[in-house]
Image (cartoon, rainbow, N blue to C red; front, side):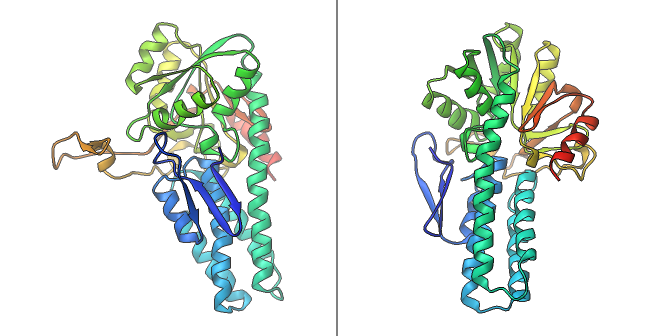
Length: 349
């Protein structure tokens, strides 16, 4: 299973809105189709949309080749494409990280270069982002698995697996590694309303790997914890502030509060590209709000009265005080996060 694949000047994306009932790949020959896929959640997960946006920049440069632009004009057009891509999803910082990295490549191309030189440089950068994500996933898995030294049942929320990245995943990458080492006995997957990423994606992924998974509705997590059916929680992240506050799929905050109440460790697995070193706390993280229809309908059927008011934030923020540890490719960060994240930033330069 490949979340995305770059071949013959085309970005192929698995359509996650159709899973688990249908496995279909979307062929993206232009950057606008990639942007649409990100908006529609056909591709989702912070690292995955970052990689997809990087390849969208390559496709944009290829389209501009037909216009015979001079280098300043080309750079301006690519900046406009980058701005459009930024607007597809406002919360996941990996998207902005990848776009900024691609623009840095554009700006480093000398004025004497031609469009083909820019395309080649962008393609190399996008492929590097993709390959690095694979390595980062594996490094996180190794570090995270070290937290599980005895057979453990874990709970996870949303999907932080292969579908959210280019490789084995963040939280699910850790689970996969610990499972192979004999230290994961069971995974409880929250269904993750309103779009059911846990039910449709996480449960499907784990079943593909024959890892024991039990699906529960979001409001069952507390009872599962009270009955000692899980001994740890591990989730992914879409943006992490300097103080360790974590933005992740809506419902994560509730899980963290429940874990704290039941003295269960709450772990976050995220690459360094998910850290936003420009913001001091979760109060500065923009929270995407999505369509009312995601809440008022279920399986294509209306389940709410016509005209009812809806609040549909796609993410929430878990305060750092509820986070037991943050797993990165550089190691495991612990409180005080202002200090450990400051050290992490030094590695990212």
